[in-house]
Every structure is written in structure tokens, then in C-alpha cells.
Amino acid sequence: MKTFTSFFFAVAILVGCTSRNQNAEETGEETEQVVDPVAQTDNSETAKAGTEDEQKDLAEKYAEAQFGSLVTNVANQRYGYYIYIDGKIVIEQKTIPGTAGKDGCVTKEDAQKVADLAIAKIRNGNMPPTITVEELKELKIQGVE
Image 1 (cartoon, helix red, strand yellow):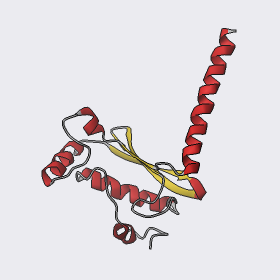
Image 2: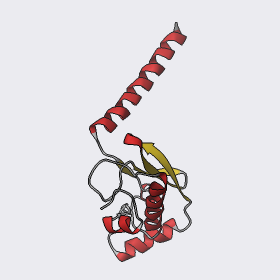
Image 3: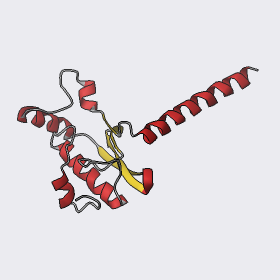
Image 4: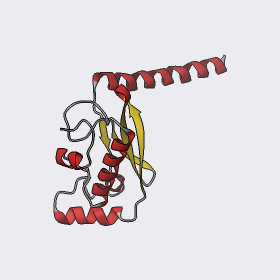
């Protein structure tokens, strides 16, 4: 009986978590999550660099960090990406940043180009990395006008 009860609770938790994630995607809730591991470990600083000195300090901290990205499928046969710093997800981007709408990138290559730009901005101390429409046009991201 203990085994059945444990199994039942495990399945209930799994189903609850899965349906919550699906509901968030269907309702269009927050599509980008940004976490700054440097700010989490050092509470004396904020995640966003406001001044040139703060930006320089963040860039110095990120100089030794290991960055990575992973392109992933999102809704409507589009692509988004995750950005990792030192093995931790710091950005989950399901839509084209800097644009209106809820669609991801048209191609995997476009998603990777945008992720690479975001990583470059973070390395320079821009956290969160703000990406403009002009930059997306320079990268020739499909669907950006």
C-alpha cells in the first residue's frame, strides 16, 4: 500500500507541474526569465548595470564565466533559446526579443544568432541584455521589420 500511495503522489505532482507549464504557454504568461548568478551570490550588487562602472564590474566578473546556449523548439514551429552561465540557466527566451508578439525565431540559425548577441552583451556587462530591432535587422533575423 505504501508503494501505491508514493506512486500516486509522484504522478499527481508530475501532472500538476506539467499542466501549469502548459497553461503558462497557452495564456502567454512571462516568456523570458532572467537570473543573474553573480547577483545571487553577491547580494551587494544588483543584476542590472546602471552606470559605466557597474557595467565594467559585471564585465570583469563575467570574464571568467563559462557561457553556453541551447536553441530549443517553442510554439508554432518556431525557436527560442536558453543561455547558461557556469552551467545555470540565466535566460529562457521563447520569443524574438525586442519585438511585439509572441512568436519565436523562424529558424534555428536565427535563434542562435540572437543568443550569441545576448551572450556578447552579457560578457560586456549588460545584464539583462537588451536587444533592439535595429540589431535584429543587422543580423538579418527573419520576420523582423
